[in-house]
Image (cartoon, rainbow, N blue to C red):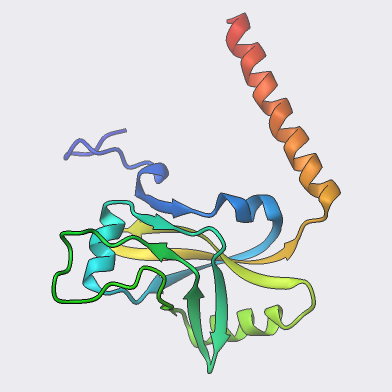
Amino acid sequence: MANKKGKSKGPGNNVIAQNKKARFEYHIQETFEAGLALSGWEVKSLRAGKAQLTDTYILIKNGEAWLLGSHITPLNTASTHEIADPTRTRKLLLHRKEIAKIFSRTQDKGHTCVPLKLYWKKNLIKCELALVTGKKQHDKRATEKERDWNRQKARIMRDNT
């Protein structure tokens, strides 16, 4: 479905970067939406889709949430007067109760908090966080088997029609 400007309003067009590895490696327990404190060159790079979330994690320190390990590649035209650090620690904007909940859950053994995706929400950049527990090797194999079976089913259905 297209709106007046000709752009589709589907959920897929607003995603900047996804952490596909996280969905494979972890069982997702609960998700949160957080804002990001960014500088101007980072926003321009995100508009160009130059972000990476692999091996990224969330750290709670002094009652604040931080995004560590994310990589936003600076555009060569974006900033001439500022030195761009692509892997700098970025502050996550969450409510105090959400930070307290994430902190208490990550203190439990086997629990951690990882970012799942960066996306646009109107004109703001948001980060979807998840409280997760690690998958065992047999869980990963089952996930892979199910994915292969779904792919095979789709192939059979496509060939028969």
